[in-house]
Length: 387
Image (cartoon, rainbow, N blue to C red; front, side, top):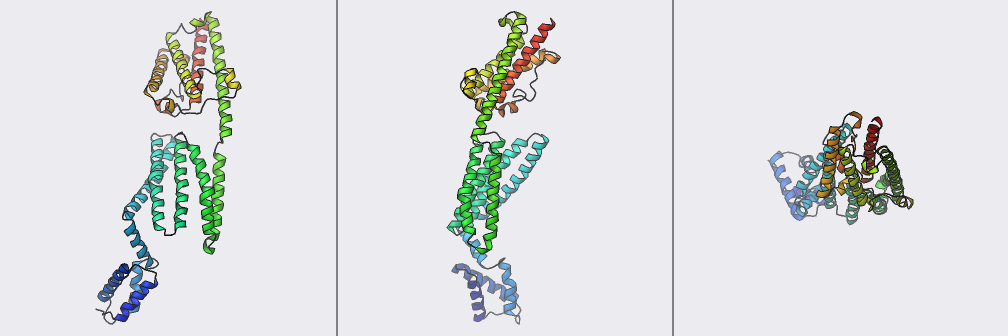
């Protein structure tokens, strides 16, 4: 058993202090712990300095200062390790489920949307907040903390923007724009001025700044500007109006065959019911999207347009959802009672299944309704032409 002398203890104490430790309780506890190990493990005639140098590295990776930093974290942030474990688990979970969700989406397997939404939700609300919270707690410099917060906000916004975009929820583009603005005008200036001052980080700072600028530029090329979006909606509305005009001509042709516009669909009561249900639902959607009951030439001439809202927004109420169910049932009943080419094709339309209906756009749904109405009229005209 080795007996430590005062000069040995002073040597250890000075070495600990030379590493930058300031917490006196920690210094004394560490000194006591090291002394106990040396006295217990070192042989009586052993080399003190050599043995001390061999065991001290078992307490840290680089220096004793790591122990003090870890202790301060534990004292000021009691749930540090628990949060760290949750962060790691949520990160692994998000990455795994997101990968599976993307694979399922490409393969058109069920459950893809649930996986993507769940993974991006956990990423946005658990992993990223915990990651940046822990990093902020580890920093002592106020500037570094501000830099981390400035980076955390756009990271979370970007994740939410992607989630909202995939799900066709509102404000996806708004969050994307905010991400770019914060990155370019808040985070980038702070990051650049902080890193460019130090020679060892100067090159990495310049390269990272270039990557951020290029990344923001590439992202903006994929975003539809408000002006472009308006032009697209004006064009889509004009196309719907032209389809409506074709529908009106089909009604006139059928009425001429019947010699009475009131009896256009009277030869097939189920066909008439479906046509009227489609017309009613179409008018409801027009009212919801543009505040009008019917498209006319004045509406188109003034470059007005139907809002690009989700059909799911209209179906938010129980009454509206019941209207869709009633319409779908009428179409299915009509198709069961008809043969071959007389059936109306609802495949890949908002009437195909419930999930498709909720994620459909209202302008697209109106176009599909008009097309189904044209199909009904054409089938009736063909039947009457044969008779």
